[in-house]
Every structure is written in structure tokens, then in C-alpha cells.
Length: 125
Image 1 (tube, rainbow, N blue to C red):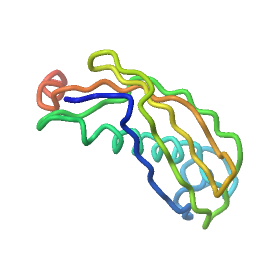
Image 2: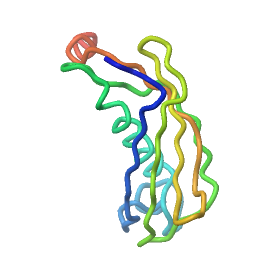
Image 3: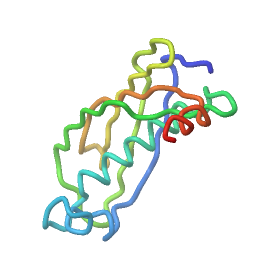
């Protein structure tokens, strides 16, 4: 594991009908649903950390703060970015942002912890 604050990832997604608030049960409007937006932001955090993980390691989310500031219609192209801003051993905080063109759609912070995947799953039993 080589966690540093220079880790970053950018993903692109297009809002589809299945991504709307109406489709995911987080409202009644045909706009990007906050739960979907959050999942996309978390995917960006995973992508940012992936190159630094050793074989058998993964990261799990432990805290999320996300402000969904503007609506996005079906068909909108959304750019999601995640940047590591703090590392404390296996705990990592990442700044996240979602943009539609130059418009900021959402921003926030996601905290993840790097774990051994097998050991983590063994705790479930």
C-alpha cells in the first residue's frame, strides 16, 4: 500500500433514465438521483485508491458528506473527480466533486479505510 495525497481519479458518466430520483426512489423528478450521484462519487474514490493498493487489499467507505447542489437532466454528461486530501495509516479522506461542463453539481468528502478483503469478509461470519 502506497497511499499519498497525489492520488486522483476522474470518471465520466451519463445520466440515464435508471439514474433518476424517480427511478431510485429518492424523489419523484426525472433528474439525477442523489443516491446514484453518491455511488458515482464513491466509484471515483475507489478508482483513485486502486493503483496504491496491494494484492488482496480493498477500501471500504466509512463516512460521506455530500452536498448535491444542482439538478442534472437525463442525458447530461457528468465528470466525477476524487482527490486524496489526507492519509493517516489506512484511513484516507478524499475530496469529491461532480461537474456538468463548468457547472458544479456536487461536492463533498468521502472517508475510506484500506482493509485486507479476506479478513474483512471473515468478520461477517
